[in-house]
Image (cartoon, rainbow, N blue to C red; front, top):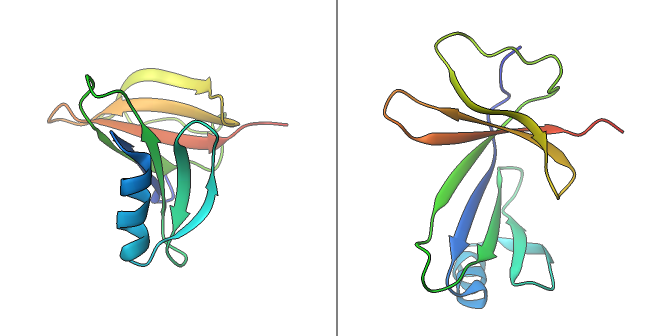
Length: 114
């Protein structure tokens, strides 16, 4: 089983409001916001952007999330270095972290089993 392409882009920011307005100015619509300075924006049928505010002493990061249809059925090729196996997230999915040959970390996300 392979991934199904890019599911989302996860961004951290020092200012949730400014970041959300930036993407809204580029045509993204706010789908929802949380009560802790984060939220999801979408533009059409493409990947969504999730933005979360972090403290000033942390450096903003970008993470690309690849979609996996079934965590239990996913078996990565030996060329894929698994950093962390699928684990439950606080937002109702399962997430695996893998590393590419240049050292970048990638997030693989699958639906949680009900």
